[in-house]
Length: 347
Ligand SMILES: [Zn+2]
Image (spheres, rainbow, N blue to C red):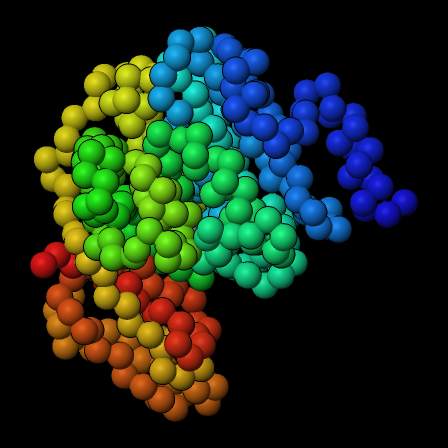
């Protein structure tokens, strides 16, 4: 029996619990006070042609808060945190609606690929707004853009360092001055999230330029949009799972959608950053650095080097700016033009 057949039988067995539906708005309206799990299907001949979506439709009317995990399938702490959140949240105590995508890129998850969907080699977080008639990655991006973002009042995309990345947890949003109120809410939600490093990016794209990133697409579409980064190196760090969950509960509490624990307060020790600088590799080779995410460095500091397969140094890496390492490559292989360091700073 081939895998495709096996999968369809399994899905049939699950049918009483999992429906197939593309119309999320209808699910929200028809299932007040309930949680509904559904599979969105794409026009691709593959066992990985679907995306799971969970709708938790609260008893009382209120905002729609969207949470996406697994845009990169090798970033596990967000996926684990979301699994726990959808089990814990009681629809009867929820005001408004949660739209949760537990794993946006199932092919990347099951095939354990860094950044890209193995079916088309494309990075979902570079594919927005996507296309209904495109490859699997373009279809997923299109569905999120056309069906999920328009429903959302708040759009939260959660990532971690990928399997090769050492990363400092941070929360970020675009300083979209065209949408002042929405951006102000993004900044307030960041401040009470409990995540220590807060990055606001300059927003420079026009209304029609491709946004590329999921939460930039939501920001371009006039939504309150944020992204959390927590976890690293292909592991499920318990503290990152807790940090993500705490941030989500704090935000839901601030939005008066769900009360779990005390009202969240602004973090007095938060570090505010408003720009990033990337250091790219100039050779293929072996990356050496004793620095870690979260280390502070000065402009001009030597921060690592790249050697060839025989140990010969090909390139010394110097820091281009004063700042904190938000993430860096945390494993030896490096390819020309890859980002080896991302430094956050404030100006
Ligand atoms: Zn990611």
